[in-house]
Image (cartoon, rainbow, N blue to C red; front, side, top):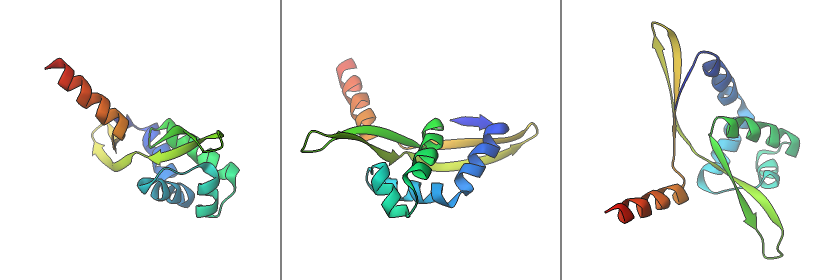
Length: 117
């Protein structure tokens, strides 16, 4: 997913933020709720939600609905960002976000490929 100019600055600023970095690191290995992220990162839930909104806007994090044993539901967040590449061209800078596919998307793609054979 290539982005140019203004996005380069916005994405750069977002990734330079220590809180954003913590959220991405925490959600790389397992999905976490905003409350869990708040505790793990030692920041307010409001700050977590603001960063998650920005990360979701750039598809660096996805959200899924989780239902606990009591029937309560809440969102959990998973990092999809794998790599960021910034390239200098004659026209300026571009940023390429390499994203991990979610397991469900890979499974759906697999089923579609098998069905098409």
